[in-house]
Each structure stands twice: as C-alpha cells, then as structure tokens.
Length: 313
Ligand code: PEP
Ligand code: MN
Image 1 (cartoon, rainbow, N blue to C red):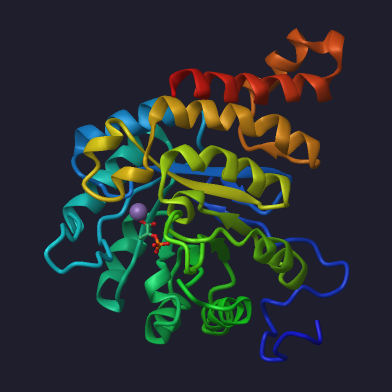
Image 2: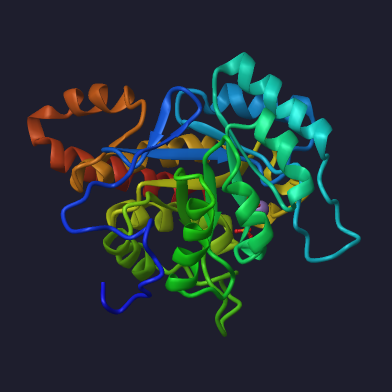
C-alpha cells in the first residue's frame, strides 16, 4: 500500500477486507462470488433493437448496457438518442426484469439517467471530469467508473475516491484498455492493472474487452483471461446485427456469440473459485460430463467454444 497515494482513504483495501458488493437494481450484485456479465449494444438505436437484445440475453447476461449519450470522437457522428433512448432502456428493463447501465457525460444529463437507469457509467473520456464525479457522489445509483485512456491506476483510484468522498460508496471500477503505440488492437488491455486493483481496493473491478480489443474476434479470449485473473465481471458490446451498429461496429459480437461466450466463461469462473451470476446451464453441462471430472469438463466446453469459432472463420 505504501506505493500508492495516502489520499486513497475510502477506496483502499485494508488488510483482510472483503470486496465490497455493489448492487445493480434489485437482483444483481457485483463483487461477490458470482461474476457479473453486462451485455448490450454500444448505442441504443431503437426500441426494436433493445427488445431483441433483452430477449436474447435474458438467460445469459445479468444486466443490459446501452449508451444514449455518446462521447464520439467526431462532432459529426451520431451523438445518441438522449432521453428518448433512456425511455427505451427503461421500458425494456421493466418488461424483461433486467437492470440497465448507461453513460452519463455531464452534470446536466445526470438527473434523468439517475431516475431511469440502474447503473451510471463514467466513460473513459470523463474519468477526470471532477465536477461530474462530485455530482455522481450525490446520485442514488451505483457508478461504473471506466479507466481513462491514459490514466494511471492511482488516478483511477483517486477518481473513485472523488465519488465516494462526495457521498456515493457504490463504485465499480472498469479496466477498458489504455492507449499505446500499437494500433492493431484499439487499446491495450491492462490485466496487470486488474490484478493490482484487486489488491489495492475493496471496490469490485470489471473488464471491458470490447473497447480494449476493438475487434470482435479478440473479445472472447480477452474476456476469459479477465475472469481467470480475478475480475469481478465483464461488460461486452453485442448487437442483433453487429456490422450495422451505429457505433463501434467492428468490436460488436452477435447476440449468439455473446451467449456462447457466457457459456465458455463458466468453467473459467469455476476454476478460480467463482460462478457466473444466475448460472443454471452449467449444472446441466457438468452433470452430463461428470464421468471425466468437472475440471476436464470445463476444458472441453472451452475448447468446443474455440473450435466452433474457428470453424466459422
Ligand atoms: C462505451 O462504453 O461505449 C464507451 C464509449 O466506452 P469508453 O468510455 O471506455 O470508451
Ligand atoms: Mn462503445
């Protein structure tokens, strides 16, 4: 602990302390034994899209993501549906009983998002928007705080500290890749930071392999690696028609691949003493292959997943 700022008072893990469990809506908790999976599109595009997403991901994901305020690099790119999108998210959530995660970019957007969504995301570009962080300290909903594009681990923890010091203890950290010299992957997924954060803070830490990779074919393996190294959950972009996504199309998984990915996470989670929240499927699978031992059964499930992926090209 001496290597990190003594200004990290509320977020710091004290010796032997448990990871804090942060509730998203009424039924989901991040930071306990089950890892939590959040899936959905980069951007909420229309009600029909979100209906398909929710109905297909219901048995696999624990919460649905979807941006209505989008931080686009270009001012000419689609900026999100705004409050209309928020209403789509809310009615989808009420119909399917799934909590929602959406990004808040400014203090002005906070009240409506706080009322209508279940978790408020601070995007990478806003990790050090201190006025926003202070306002989120007064929010009623838990915060998903994404690491800045070039933020250090300490800066991420200090950003969390801002939210906590202003009154909101419900913060989940998210490693989503950092900028480096190689543009082959969109960012570099810093799994070392995940391991370090798990030691430095009692706050749950989840991983976003989608924005890290920037390419859909890299997402599943990075997601499994994240769970293997101790992440408390994943947030992954997927879309009914990935190539047609209005934003981040290149990294979006199909809903079918998303469901398959969640299945492949289960044996990895089990291998590190975790489960997947709402896990039902795995019990059936493990029973089927009990003869060869549940550890090997896990390996088989993962390999089958990879084989299917390769076969599809
Ligand atoms: C997003 O989640 O769609 C997003 C913009 O993420 P990030 O802030 O990590 O780039
Ligand atoms: Mn995105």
